[in-house]
Image (tube, rainbow, N blue to C red; front, side, top):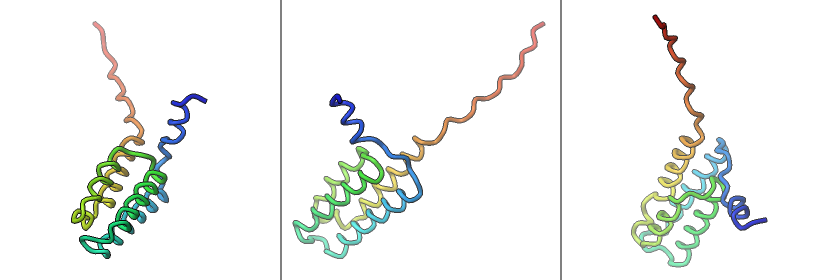
Length: 116
């Protein structure tokens, strides 16, 4: 198996289902809630562990998306982890994935032309 085929298998985007959406939102809300409970400075290692678990689980549930990377980096800044960044990121990824999975609109029937 070629390297590109292996990467495609690992980074594949699973179909977006209701349960995947609920599970991803639950993971994001839990991560944001735990960080809110820990306070603005949190426990240094615990905060980063929560972020790492949230990113891995979200990528596993919804498939990897580039929006996960800046969210992970922003969460490393001590005070910004008080914001619900994981929840916002998951909502944005879900919206983008839904738009990408939407079937294209049916083509407009062409009006018959009358030639004279």
